[in-house]
Length: 408
Image (cartoon, rainbow, N blue to C red):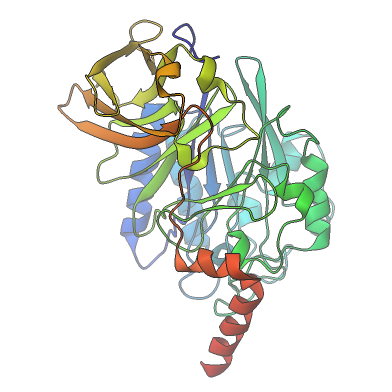
């Protein structure tokens, strides 16, 4: 159970919809800021890049955009193997043709391309079209193993930009994903990541997927706070804020089998923190252990920029007195803890506020609801999500999109 005695956390980052483009050099510059300043300071276990790595603003794949993307990552990350994982978005296949075409630049410059993964495994790929674009990754912390499944749902062949909007979710792809999954999500908590939210795919994921994957990370729609629980199954969908316009990025933390996250942007990237115990009640799931009942300490994971340090972390529960959270494991610790008695908050929803300061006189305040008895706070739903809950919105959106294309 969460205590003051360990740093058994797995910290990783997500960045989505980077859209490096020839016509707007600032998109590459802000991505470079993310890799140079944010990734280097947090030093996560790995990074997930969930598609639209490049923009292809001229309607075809650009060699310059792809070499820029690869070059930025390679400049600041000494070893990308088992660290930088990327999947394609629809822009990464605009006008591409087939996977074996010369303009399939992801094969050459993507860090999780089939060619690169095969080379790392010492496998010769004679026909790349027969090698899966989806893949599995395992990671562990404190004896707990976590599974990450990268899913490529881009149309093949890559269509022209107006036609290339939906993710291609075939029965074959679902069977492949199911092959990566554990029958018991409690045994190996699983995150799936791709570019397309489920509502923008040609079909829903199968029930075995929605009942085994705890969280589905994606991007594509450039919407903030786009969160949704699956109508059937345990899966919670979390779209990331885009890097292109919002300059967004996400820090995620597994803490003793429980996932927490915070969405940030490059305008004010530090300090960054996530309250991991007690967890945000909006994202409670029965598929994760309810350790908050037996926990002895509030836990907060916090970072600041290089050459600075966290100077204070203070928490308040239900508007009560301020409680100092101290580094759990000495100077330089990334986990800050404060003793508490969860039985004092045993019924219903409660409020926690954490205020974090760093040595550069910067601060961040996090406010969230929590519960000890498993009470869940309501997710705020967008119009897209409400419509999807009322019916098969995937089909309706496709019909509307097709009508728009015909009109244009």
